Image: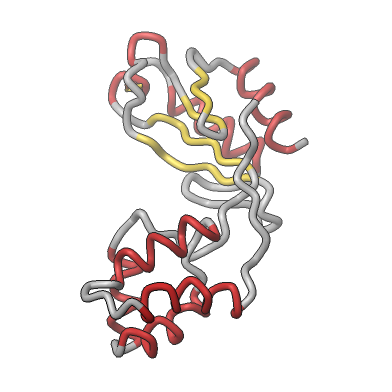
Length: 162
Ligand code: FES
């Protein structure tokens, strides 16, 4: 089983260290590479980094926040320890993914697109894993799980809540 992404909340000094790498090099157009570096380092772009980035790159906070919130690749919250991504594309829908989603929502106690407040698990939509003929399908911590039925939901819930 692959390790779930689990990173401690970053300290301001750690964030500043990453920012300094880009600001010191005087890179033009450094904002996107810097945001990607923060996301890679910490798993998300901590909102407390926004004013530090703005100052380092001589941008407004609104400009930095606008870019972070515009690109869906950037997370603004720490990632959950486990992520279940359920396919919502057409073939999986025709094979019963709506009922599987309802069961996951009920069993995990979170809505689609939400994470548990304790950071244990998040449930996210995904659109086609290329396994259409054997759906409904999901990725559980990036591991494909195909042909999900109620028994598979039980196993998934047990795994991600352990
Ligand atoms: S539609 Fe779900 S894997 Fe293709």
